Amino acid sequence: MRGKEHYGEQHGLATGAAVRSIDVFTEMDAARADWLALSDATGVSPYQSFAFLSAWRDTIGRAGNVEPFIIVARDADGAPTALLPLCVIDRSIRIALFLGGRESNFNLPLLRPDAGHDSESLRDLLVQAARLTPAGPDLYYLRNQPLRFEGVDNPLAFRNAHPSASFGYGATLPAKADALAARFSKETRKKLRRKEQRLAELGALTYEHRVKGAHGAEIVDALLRQKAARFDLGGEFARLNVSGLLNQLRERAEDGGVELHALRMGERIVATYAGVVRGGRFSAMLNSFEQDDRFARCSPGELLLHALMRDLVARGMTHFDLGAGEARYKSRVCDETIALCDATLPVSARGAVVAPLLSAYLRLKRRVKQTPALAKAYYRLRSAIAG
Image (cartoon, rainbow, N blue to C red; front, side):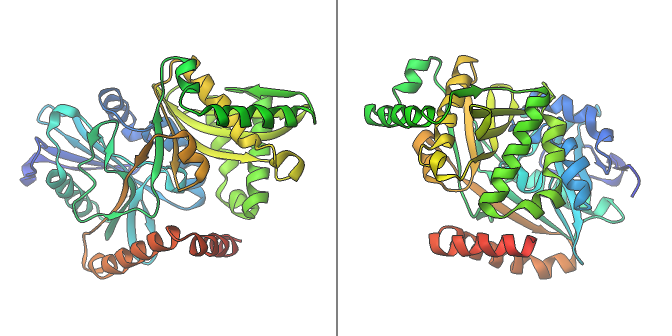
C-alpha cells in the first residue's frame, strides 16, 4: 500500500455523522497532524497518544511485522472528525487491531466531540476503510475497549461486543494528601509502616519518582529482569523489544511519555513502576519487585505503589489506573472498576468465517481468566509457547 490512500465525497460516502471523506494512512507520520489536532479536542487514555503509539510501532510493532492502518474521517472542510489508531497483521487472514498490542491497557477512538459519531457511523467508517484499500483487513478485532471513559460513552464498543477477559481498575485522585491517606483504614496504614520499617532494617530506603537519564535506564533493566524472573518472560521481552519501547519513551516529557518510579534499598532496586502519562492521568503499564523472600515479605511493590500515589496527588494529577487484569493489590487502592469489551467486525467472506470462531475463543478466554486455577495454567502455557 502507498503511505496514504484516499476515499472521497464523489464516491457517495454516507454515514450517520458528518463525514465527507476518509483517509487511510499506512505510515504513522502521515497521520501526525490529524492525530495531534484530535488529541487536543478529545478525552482518551495515554495509550492513544501519538508519542506512545509511534514508539510502540517502531519497537514492538516492527518486531511483530504490524502494518499501520490509521483511519481518519473528515468533514466538508477537510478537518478531522475521527481517528481510529489501528494496524493490520497477516495470519493467513488479515486482522485489524488497535495499535499498542498487549502494552495498551485501554483502547479508544479519537473522536471530535461535536461531530456526532455513533456506533452506526463508526461501523460504516470501518467497512468503508476496509473496502478503500487494496490490501485492507478481512476482520476487525477491537479488544480492551472501555464501555465508558472519564464519563463519556465509547461508541466503538458495539452492542454485540463481548466482555473482555479482564476488567480495568482506576481511581479519581483527591486534591490533598490527607484525603488520600483517609481512604485507607488505620490498620492498613499501620501495616504499611511496619513493613517499611522492616525493609529499612535491611538497608536505607529511597523512593525515586520520574527518574531520567542513566538512573532511568537502570530502572528499566531492573524492571524487566524482575518481571522476567517472576513470570519466566525473559525470552518474550527480548523478542518483543520491550526495553526498546521503554527506553524510547522514558526521556519524553509530552503526553505518551513513560514515567519511571522505583524503591531502592541501598543501591539495590527492589520495586519499580513504569506508567504512561497524559494530562492529569497516570496509567500504570508495568511493575515489578524482587522475589527474594527477605524483601518480598515486606511488600516493596505495595510500598512503592502508595508512594507513587502520594507523588501523583502532590503534583495535582487527577486520575490513576492500574490497567486490565484482576489482582488484589489493585482492588485495595482503586475505587473504580472499568468494564472493557472486545468487538469483532468481519468485512470479507473470509472474515465472516473466522469471526464466530474468534468470538467463541474470546468467551472461553474470559471464562479461563475469571477462574483462578485455569488462569494460572493459562499464563504458564502462554509463557511456554512464547519461549
